[in-house]
Length: 103
Image 1 (tube, one colour):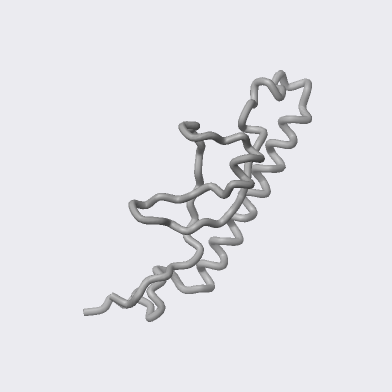
Image 2 (cartoon, rainbow, N blue to C red):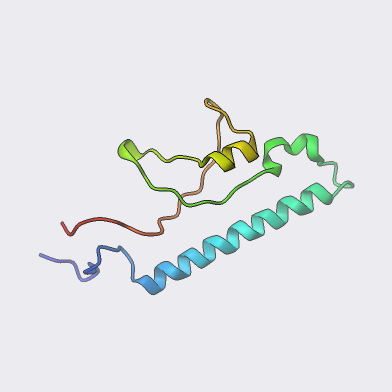
């Protein structure tokens, strides 16, 4: 029995909707980066670089989900953000492409 929402390519949503979701997420990242830059430049607000700490740094990259649900942060991003083993980081996960055989 198939659900009317099932698609032959295994995606949950139609490609046009996925493209819209991806564009929205990219816009959100840009807005977050602009917000951080505004915070860094706002000396009268009482929030400065020392209070922001790691919030003033961010990276956007694509990675593949590995066994056990693990993802890897590329070397260049870890070095640029000074991330070491044991550090706590915040992530936003947006599926881009599914590589699955038909089930």
